[in-house]
Length: 106
Image 1 (cartoon, rainbow, N blue to C red):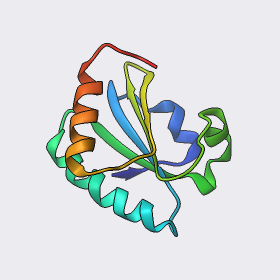
Image 2: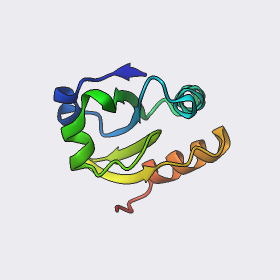
Image 3: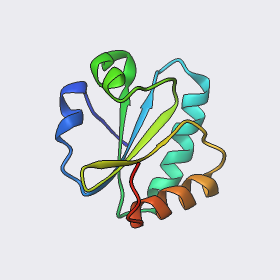
Image 4: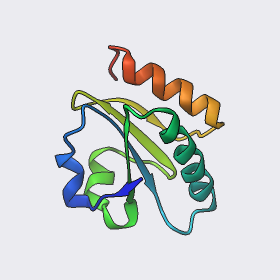
């Protein structure tokens, strides 16, 4: 996943993308990152990015990030899913696949 800085977060041009938010010393974040790496390979039409929220307080506040790990899924410039639970690779795959192809929005 490509690492983005806070100033880059509002300038992503992909139609469908997932933004993974983490902190480097979070053990659960490290596991979630590995899971998303697998899902990324299974969903080539979805762009995957990551951001260390320690360096993005304004973004975290604007998107009301409550904890990490967290992912935000965007489609057509709108957030369509926010997730804190990374149950399994298959769970993430199905959720991201469904939300990235559906017309529903938060």
